[in-house]
Image (cartoon, rainbow, N blue to C red):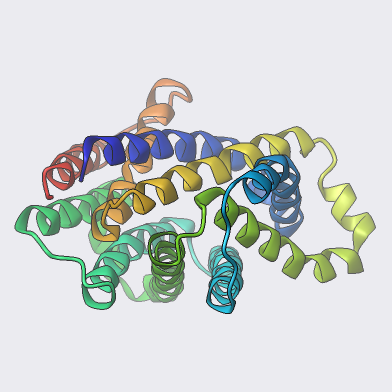
Length: 291
C-alpha cells in the first residue's frame, strides 16, 4: 500500500473512531437517530456534490446507477441487521464477529472477484488485524464465542460481516472500475439509505421527533464525520490501494477507540485488549509493506 493511501486510511480510522465515540452517547435512540444523521449527511455534503456535478466531468449510466442503489440497500441492510443482532444477542458477541469477518470476507472477495494479487505480508497482516479485533472486543476471551449460548450472536455477527464485505466490494467497484467520484458515490448511497428509511419514519413522525429531542447536535456531528471517514477510504481505493489491504487496515479504528477509552473515558483495559492493540498495530505495519 502506498504511503498516501496509508495516510488516507489512518485519517479515516481517526474520523471513524471519533464518530463512533459520539454515536455511543445516542445508541438507545435507535432507527430515528440513524435516519436523522443520514438526513444531516445528505444536507451537509450536497453543496460539495453539486460543485462536482457542475464543474467536473461526470458520466452516468445504468451500471453506475445500479451500483449506487445496490450499495445503498446493502448499507441499510447492514445497519438494520446490526441493530437486530444487538436486540437478540450480546453486543460483545455480535460486534467482534462482524468486525472480524467483514474485512476477512472483503479481502477474500477482492482476491477472488476483483483479481487482486495475494502476498504473504498482506495475508499475515490481515490475520493479525482480525485476531486483534477479536481480542479487543472479547477482552481476550475469544473462546466464549464458541459457547452454545453465543451461537445466536455468532450467526448475526457473521451476517453483518457478510453485508460489510458486500458493500465494501460494491463500493470499490463503483469508484475503481466505474470511476464515480468518491464524494458523489457516498452521498448518493447515503441519500438512498435515507429515502428507504423515510416511509418508516413518516409513519411515526411524532415518536421520531420525541426520540431525537436533545440529540440533534450529535446527529449533525455524525452526519459530517461518518461520511468523511468513508470518503477517505474510497479515495484510497480510487487511487489504487487494494481492497484486500484497505479493508483490514480500516480496523485500526478499534485500536484508536480502545486507546481513547483508556485515556479519555478512563475505561479499564486488560491484557486481552492491550494484546489486541499490538496485533492490530503489527497487522497495519505488515499491510503497509504488502505491496
